[in-house]
Image (cartoon, rainbow, N blue to C red; front, side):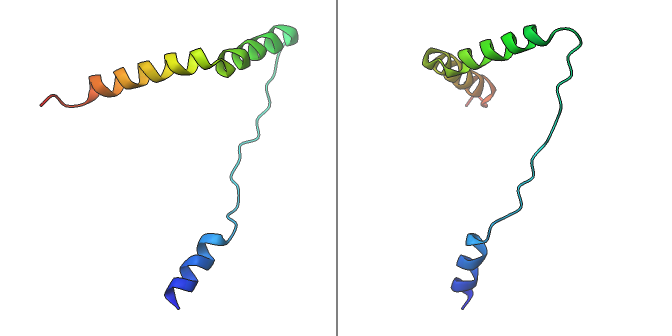
Length: 67
């Protein structure tokens, strides 16, 4: 009975907590669009993911306690 209840609880949908924000620009709408477009192009590049993974690994190694 406990197993069935646990499975039922895991399958129940949880409420989504999302953040809805506005981005205000003052006479700089096109510059903002260009900035987000460039940001999307950077994050979609696989070379950037390798670059970010390298720095993440180095950061983890640098903060790990030396034995």
